[in-house]
Image (cartoon, rainbow, N blue to C red; front, side):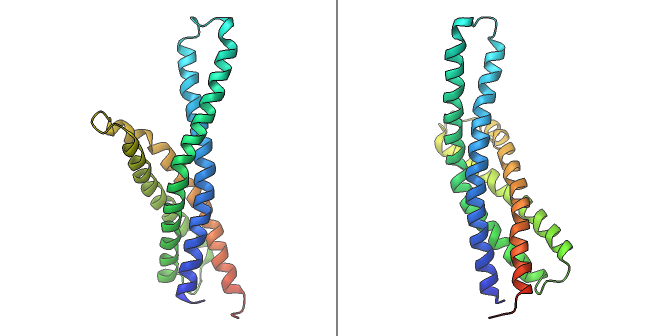
Length: 181
């Protein structure tokens, strides 16, 4: 396998899997986050609501789930594609520098998983924070609070990247089992 084929194969796979994971995880996190905020508010105000407000409450939960899902996807899609592609390139460079040709598959998978998870967590945190600041009122934005808020989805993205790295490493290992054509 040539270096160019290795880097290209890992970069586009990282981008494609990052896009898919960013979309799915962002949508799920946004829906759960929106729902969680509403449930906390409802729990605080439960005594003042009455039985006549149950249906509007259910409708509000549904709307917030939808809005949260869309907002989560708006964060997850661009970040997943960009960070996933960069992660794929990073994995390719690590592979080429230290595991070319493949020797210890177990050590390789561990190194790639840790590098992917760490890089993706940090890069996603920066990306999510940048998107939040882009949409926020910069004069009134509480940047430390925003930095904490985007920490959880960034860690989720990192765990997702660690799992995705297994598929990328499996592709590399399978490519080296097949004869060159």
